[in-house]
Amino acid sequence: MSAFLTACGGVTTVFLVGFLGYLLVRRGWVGPEMTKNLPRIITTIVLPAYLFRNITSGFERDQLLTLLYGSLLPLCSLSISFASAYFLARAMGMRHGRRGIFRTGFSVSSAVIIGLPVTAALFGEDALQYALLYFIANATFLWTLGNYSIAHDGEKAGVRLFSLATLKNICSPPLMGFLAGMAMVLLGLHLPAFLDKTIKYVGDMSIGLSLMYVGMMLHGVDVKAVNMERDVLMVFFGRAIFSPVCVLALSYIFSIPPLMRNVFIIQAALPVMVQVPVLAGYYKADARYATVITTFSTIVCLVALPFWMVLITAFL
Image (cartoon, rainbow, N blue to C red):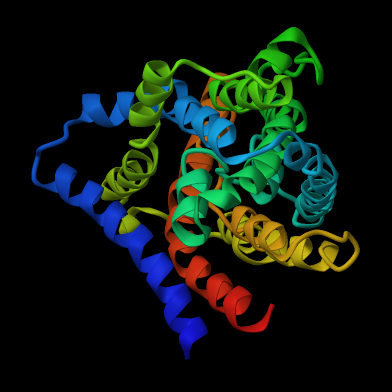
């Protein structure tokens, strides 16, 4: 019973902060312009500060070096999920314009704007180091195989798998904040106290703002307007069941700490990455399908997270 209550308490915290964001939009306190710009503020300013401060204040040099081995598990898990989605799309006879979106949505999760605050809320700030390992693998897959596959759904089939643009997208501001923090620790450097405190104040906004943004995004969802066809439901299966089960199975092969395993499972069960519909629109693929699976996988995630938290807390 205590395990169940612990799991429910962590998930309830996430829900309540997200619900606050939903209410802000519903009451008109937050308009479309704010909702549009908030992800940019979080991703380019708040999260990099949060990750930089978390690394520089919470880790020693020897601890960071031991993290590298753990990055193998999410890379293997994402590879298996993407390959499985490739064959599923062929077996279902999925039409052109959706195949790359399906493969990407099935395997890649929203590991930054949703994943980091959820991880911190459920497991504490000590777990963020593991969430970042998953994020690095996740971002690499999105901007290489995911970007390439979605481009072939649309009108830009000549997009290369690896390019300078790919590297630029992988090296996002949150990752740069994380790597800058690692460099400071590995080199034994320290910021002046006033600058360290400034970064802390900015970074401390990350969890609340990110979770409220999820609630703001859910406010515009019209459940009745969406046809829950097979192509949509299979993405939900990939996000809520297949990907976390894949991580759980691989955790018995890789010798990793229990907290790292638990964080990877939750990261794998998160919604479709928010950049997927953006890429679909840019390449003129089926952007509506991409938007549907991204938005509604967030709702599915709200059901899947309590299940996985109870399983993790009670049985693993």
